[in-house]
Amino acid sequence: MSGFHHRIATEADIPAIRDLMARAIAVNQTAFLTPAQIALSHSVMGLDTQIIADGTYFLIERGETLVGCGGWSARATLYGGDASIVARDPAPLDPAKDAARVRAMYTDPTQVRQGIGRMILDLCEGAARAAGFSRTEMMATLSGEPLYRACGYLPIEYVQSPPVDGVSVPLIRMGKTL
Image (tube, rainbow, N blue to C red):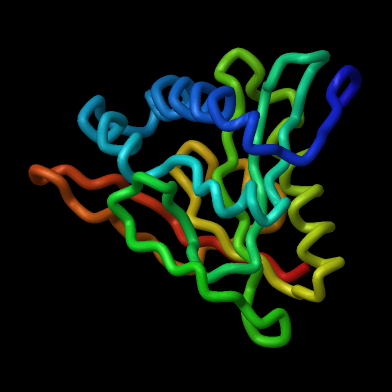
């Protein structure tokens, strides 16, 4: 991970995060989704600014360039951003019985396969463990599934996003014991 560093995202980072997410959705999903599903993905995925406000969203940078982002949450929402068509629930989770949520992981399309995703997962899992959680869950995209499996996540269920004009996005709810 030479040359990469991480920090907690701030509100000032939101435009750069949204730009990275848009590029990652548009490019990193092309081998897994149809053009219509990729277009819908922009309405299914995205940034939940509550995670930034909670201080649980990490940025991975090379120098001053944002190359990856992702976070974790102690709130019930499993996935979806501020403008998402997916229902969100900001209720707090109980570490004694609930799994922390790994959320909104994206890698710059020009930086894939360099360990950025693993770095984000390590940060999220470590922070969730420090907060008392013993499990994590996420809603994975098809493009993310190989990484998550390699990092010990197992499928819980295969789902489809809410359909729009007959199009939906396949997703995989995955979990891991920390």
